[in-house]
Amino acid sequence: PVKLKEIVNRYSGWVNVNSGKNLADPYIVALAIYKKTNTLLQDEVIVVTEESPDLKKLRLPKVCNDYNIRSMNLLGLFRNEGWTFVKR
Image (cartoon, rainbow, N blue to C red; front, side, top):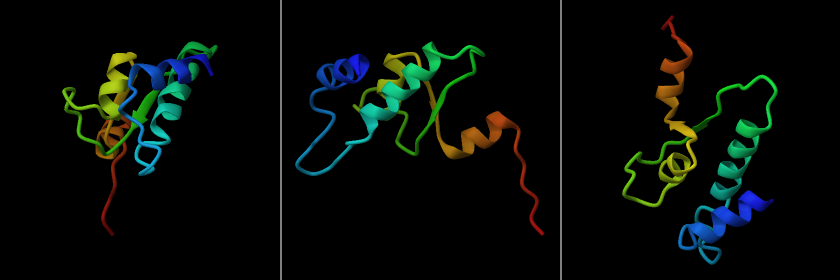
C-alpha cells in the first residue's frame, strides 16, 4: 500500500477518477514493484501494455521506467519469450 500511495502522489495527474482513465495503472505498477522486491526466485517482472513507450508522456511505460520495471507490448512479450506461431 505504501508504494501505491507514493505512485498516486508522485503522478497526481495520471489517474482521472471522473473519467475512469488509468484507474488500474497505479495498482499494476505497485504490484510489479512488490513482485520484483518480494520474490525468492528473483523472477523478471514485465508489465505488458499496448500504450506508447514514449517516455515524455505520462503513461504506464514511463512510470514503469521510473521504477525500473520493464514494460513491453504483446508482440514484444512473444519475442522475449521466444514464442512462435504457425499458421495452419
